[in-house]
Length: 97
Image (cartoon, rainbow, N blue to C red; front, side, top):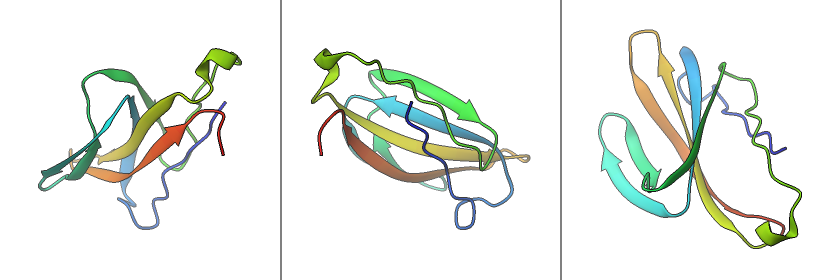
């Protein structure tokens, strides 16, 4: 299980909910006032949510066929008045270093 967390010391400290999107490829779309969308949402592998500051729980199958698989992940947060802010994205390679 991969457990990334959004650091709210710099990104929306008044967040109500955190999101994590997992996609198959990156993009670079500036979307004011939200920030820059860095993961292409088509097709989306998954969207997870958690309470602010708590880690996401991303299950990774223990199957060798996933070694070398690539993904793009990006977090976002929303506050009680509906403001949304994107975080930086991470490019992921499964089973490599």
